[in-house]
Amino acid sequence: MLKIYLYDGCGSCRLARRWLESRRLECHAVPIREQPPAVEELAAMLAARDGRRAALCNTSGRDYRESGLGARMAGLSDGEFLAVLSSNGNLVKRPFVIDAAAGIFLCGFREAEWEAAFRR
Image (cartoon, rainbow, N blue to C red; front, side):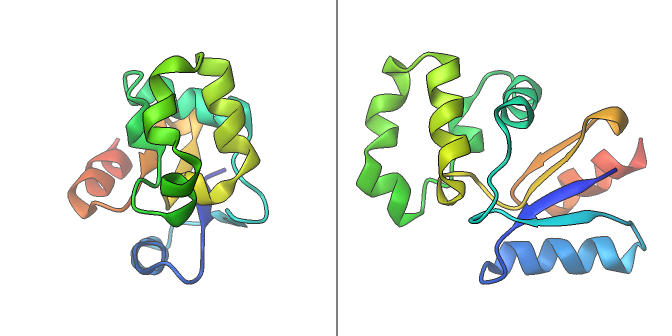
């Protein structure tokens, strides 16, 4: 089933949720701050993003800046990087949408990308 990690105070998350609802697409909503994506989900998203770590990060967030993750990222192994993200949902780009069985791996809300992903 389609799983969407989101934060209710996030404008992009609200847009994404409305987009899914307008297409009558069922999903399981998960509060990203309280329950960040699991390491396995993050690993699948990283692979879908061709290993581009920054594509998984909420680079505009305070936690990202204060943790210095951007500067530390290159020195971390994939396992260490994913463990950091899975320990703090504020570090993860949102909305974070995954349905591995359907081949859907989305970070952030870009309508054209979402349209293409759900056309498959």
